[in-house]
Image (cartoon, rainbow, N blue to C red; front, side):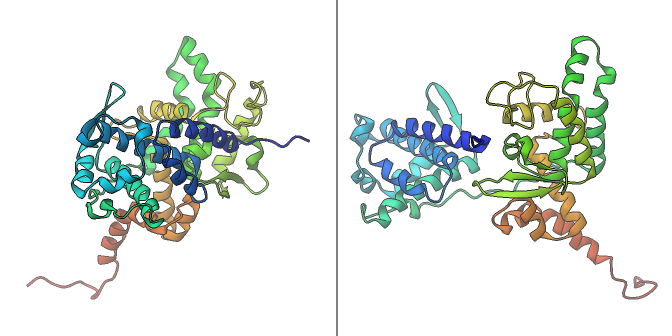
Amino acid sequence: MEKRTTYHEQTDTQNTLRLRDVLKTLPPFCRDYFRALEATTTTKTRISYAYDIRIFFQYLQEENPLFHNFSIDQFTVDVLDQLQVLDIEEYQEYLKVYQNREKTTTNGERGIKRKMSSLRSFYAYYYKREMIQTNPTLLVDMPRLHQKTITRLDADEVALLLDYVEHAGDQLTGQKKVYYEKTKERDLALITLLLGTGIRVSECVGLDVEDLDFKNNGIKVTRKGGGEMIVYFGDEVEAALQRYLTVRDGITPLAGHEHALFYSTQRRRLGVQAVENLVKKYASQITTTKKITPHKLRSTYGTALYQETGDIYLVADVLGHKDVNTTKKHYAAIDDTRRRKAASAVTLRENGAKPL
């Protein structure tokens, strides 16, 4: 029997080919660095690094007088030693807004920090191997990130969202109603799954029907970084998935998409952008003040799980966070709410203290 190629294996192959194309646009000496990253990073991460490093060399060609007339092939590792702290600071300033292939690109503090982290990693590789004598990136302060408030759905909004997905067709007519009925069970199963397990959208679209285990009410997901894990779900998720599978059985998929759990109307594996669009479509009818994405549904699940259990390590494990500090950072606001409740949880005197 021929071995099944998973979505994640296919994606990794495509990313490997894409990375090779991006590397062709970088100085030849950069390839050693990316080869060294293979053992500790995914191809998707390396592609992000490659784009970041490409912007750095674009900056040198456009803004640094020493390299105005350099072609990309003329850059050697020695160039890194010619740059001073001021050059790196000017690059950080450049990252705020720049032209990239006739398109204006802007970066906020998070985008700048990520690109600066990529450059630090790049410099560190050559410095550690004594191919350069200096590392000015270590002397440049990184942008300070301001904590963002986590957007999530409240319990009543979750119920409203699921009810809306289930009954949105009641107000529709004609082709819109036909389309809704065609995708209703899929959309309800998908949103219920995201809300009931907290899996990432990339993990969701990568699911194959063989990853479902109704005997144990679990799904095998491929986590960020490539590791596999069984995530368990409750009765509501099971019921929604079972209803969808009845519909799915009547779909003849295109070749190469036979194993996908969720199909598009074109009978292909549903993609990340399509899931983001359908979540936005339904959620916008429930709340106009919150911008709800699949990741916000993940935050909603994480919040509910933490409020129910109070176990931050369980939340980190289920969400697939490698570092529990990531989880603590995201759910610190809930901890503050719990601490405030503690103030009135213990009564010192039966009638309370009387004001003077």
